[in-house]
Image 1 (cartoon, rainbow, N blue to C red):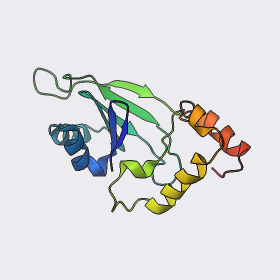
Image 2 (image 1 turned 90 degrees about the vertical axis):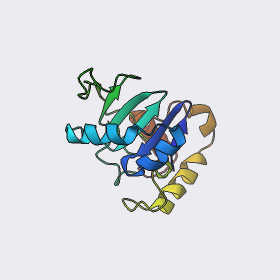
Image 3 (image 1 turned 180 degrees about the vertical axis):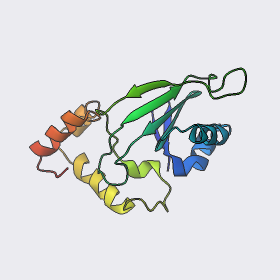
Image 4 (image 1 turned 90 degrees about the horizontal axis):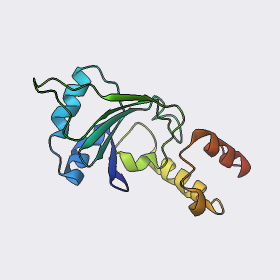
Amino acid sequence: MVKKVVNAYYAHKSNLKELMEKTSCYDLAKFVEDAEEAGYDFTIVKYDRGAVTLLKSSDWDTANEPLVDVAYRWAPDMWYNEDGTLATPKTMKNGRQIYHNKWQFVSDDYTGFDIEEAKERTKTWNAIPGIEKIKNKIGNKTYWIDLLKENNIPL
């Protein structure tokens, strides 16, 4: 699957083909390959109206809601320098943002984690009373941990 949030599309790097189909941006494959060759370590590819962000999540396969460690962002139409080399991205260290519904980022045959278990996890936290009113806050790690504790849901 590919996760869509407003105008942005997110996919695990193993699911790049589906991301390219959803966005009609077939240049992503070469760009991602070039970024890997340049040494950028990432887990997730975000595409947002021409901007590309490569996001590292070191606990992607092990955490229920993985953490964003660092993000490398290239502005629209600024992926490469005039000489064809990869442009320098804006780098943002994070450590506070988490991802929910990680099963939405991967293909159905992804084996890094149990997809069905991840879907059940989504159902569990979506049953928290009033969750719809606070979904804009749950991407923050500290807020999320407190919310889970209040509702007796394991991390």
